[in-house]
Amino acid sequence: MQYYKVRKVKEPVNYEESYWGTITDPDGNVRNRLDEREMYLDDIKQELTFLNSLPGGKILDIGCGLGFLLSELSDKFDKYGVEVSKCACNCAENYGKIFNGYLEDADFPDEEFDVIVMHHVIEHVEKPEEIIKEIYRILKKNGHLLIATPDFDSACARRFGENYRMLHDKTHVSLFTNESMYRFLRDFGFFIEKVEYPFFETRHFTKENLMKLFDTNQISPPFYGNFMTFYCKKV
Image 1 (tube, rainbow, N blue to C red):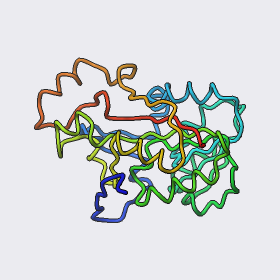
Image 2: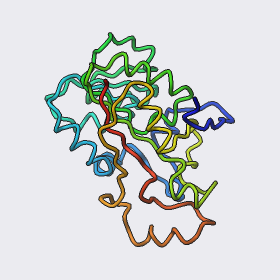
Image 3: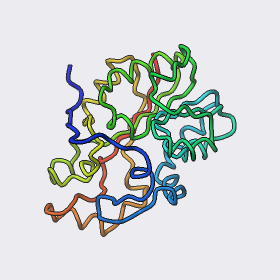
Image 4: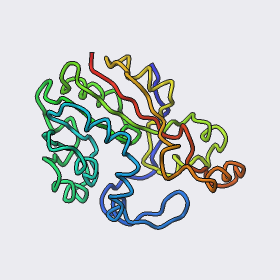
């Protein structure tokens, strides 16, 4: 069954300094991710509130990047991360026990984790079916999975076509839709408790961004439905 559209990469992906250091975003702004911890945490405050409301236990952040999410979790969690970038791992190691490599190579025991997070990672994975099977294996029964990804069939995706901002990142290779992510998670054994589409409570909800919706010749603005966050349990 097809769950996502495959997008071919023309050249090998480099997730080291060129990805985690100074970047140019879809709007042409030059930024350094290393300086954006507070902004990133503000962007994921809804997810952090949920995670910190849980009883605690062992938590794994897959594709933990610079470790910013781990850094803001309560000390009631035993914090683990998996990250392919050595550059990012050097920072993330300040906040948890980090494995540098791919999830399938970490060789975690069955039902090892109470909570697993995969926040804007699955769109970078060439074989999402394999990683979701591994997540199911290492997550405890009734354990929580939080998974976020762009919706490549959102209102902005349809309106702006190739100018959809989530296509700017060439490492986005597995393109899910809202409908297909529902099917994907259910088919691989997860119960979906709720789905959120963070926008109105974020810094992106501005008059300037709303006005950009009128010009489809430009890169699409942040908008409701671009991002979707699924809160699930293993059944």
